[in-house]
Image (tube, rainbow, N blue to C red):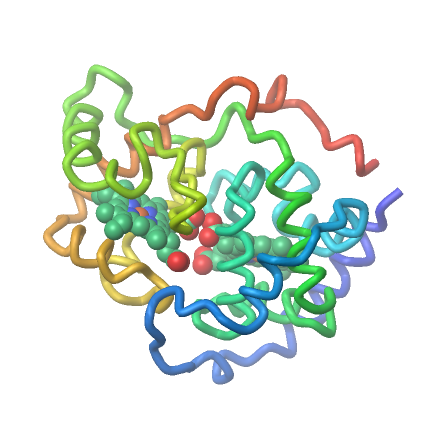
Length: 242
Ligand code: HEC
Ligand code: HEC
């Protein structure tokens, strides 16, 4: 039904013409909102159109929205709608470096604030990958125990007891996300490379060594979303695509 191959070819072509120079926007303060973020938040989403918009996204984030184990593409399925809207608006406004995705997130490619509202609603409803990729520290190992301790002391107040995030405050859900993706984002946030990062999180994790970082992300990668948010099996395929 959906023409994934064409999208793939378009992505390959665009990749060749993209220079890195365009991505040097000035730092911004966190979540000032306004503009199309606010607009998208208040529009009534049209899920049918969300599926149409998502066709472009599926070339990288996959039809299920599960991303990839190697961490190149994050799982999007199940993420809070408001977080998706904020991240998309940030990517469009160059507050977050994402040269791979940038051209596909632009109004010319997917449409205006309504398209953002629609696709965010579609993605939020997708069932999550029940077998996301995790770090090496099995429960019972010293690494897992360290991660659990660090998580309880430093992360619960924002990302929740079980990594469920907080939609009201734009704190992302991180349970069930791929280990390698989170490790990269966490390091970028710690080291100031992700410009849209929450400054309170940056402060909270300043003292984290690389080993602490791996331990806490191992722990979060192993936090499980509630069963009703998960797809029935790792082989599940999104029936909206064939
Ligand atoms: C060409 C590949 C590509 C396409 C097409 C693409 N993305 Fe992405 N997307 C990425 C990559 C790569 C990242 C992670 C960037 C990073 O590491 O910071 C990402 C990150 C994101 C994030 C941030 C996730 C998070 O956990 O913070 C959102 C939201 C997102 N994409 C939504 C979309 C939507 C919606 C579409 C379709 C309109 C789309 N993407 C199309 C490659 C793509
Ligand atoms: C003060 C609140 C706060 C604290 C404390 C905090 N975070 Fe965050 N975290 C955030 C916010 C907000 C974002 C999204 C930033 C943005 O707007 O792009 C985020 C983003 C992330 C991301 C990237 C998610 C994605 O999908 O791209 C990871 C991973 C993460 N946090 C893990 C942690 C861990 C692990 C801890 C504890 C060691 C922690 N955070 C502590 C608020 C917080």
